[in-house]
Length: 419
Image 1: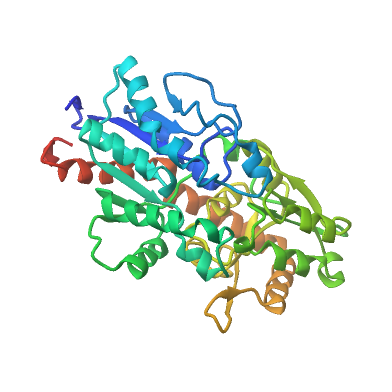
Image 2 (image 1 turned 135 degrees about the horizontal axis):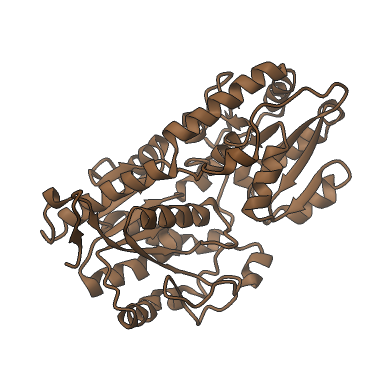
């Protein structure tokens, strides 16, 4: 082991992050999450390297980021409405461990724990675990069961590969991180309760400097419409179709201006159907997202299933009041009428969630009718809640606790009392 014991009894670790999604142009919240976790772990004194995919050819070939050259750019997979390119890049990803080992050898970096984010890179993580005889900690950002809950998988032909890799991740990781109570319950529902090595580590976000730029309190502007935004992937499970239909009715449209931020398989269809009624802004970077959220009154998150919902935190910290479905991790972040507005989903005959348009419309109207002084109270509550419960520092410290567990219980390589 090359871990070092410092004067304050915190060991500086060599950590290897393995993720399919990363900045500067992440597809999911996962990419931003990995980046912020990495930066915070570095701030705490640990050495972190990131293994990822150079999806858009935007990553620099430096000592901190390692990617597989054979993948190159895969914009075509995004254009054709696929977030991954399984099975075409399956072999390439599985051989990424060889590239990583060569790069790490050149920079004299020996990982002491490998942190895998999502099932897509689990084979790479496990091969690296075998190479260096170190544990694998996996964060479950999403489970395939959620697609079933939301009405079916968008790529059913890939299901056998996907489920196999998810099962491998769950069964062979030395510790599992769930991002919410709901995520852990879903894990137990699908794979049983015999997973004592699962931990709940909620996502956290960087708030330092953000609130200095974007004031929380808003002033009422008589005679002006309220603003609402949707931020996320334009996919069925995000509830975007029902939201656009609800917003586009005259009753709602006359009361709010609505903007859709993001891209996905439904973008073309939605633009063609609602372009004259709804503003579509496509993909924008994180700084622009914060600017949009800070300028809007409400963010609507109508997901049919959601492990957590990082975008809710991002909105809450700059004063956009959340209106969300009462599901998954969202209902752990948002309490109806206390720090946002929730609406219930319905179950169809196949036990799948769907949005009742009248229910959604009713909650949207209730939110719009809320006086500005009450909304400002919500904004103040939300800023305090994010700072106290969802800071990136708290997330990093809890993650380090999981690393400690995994290392301590992996072949007796390190003694827990050294931490």
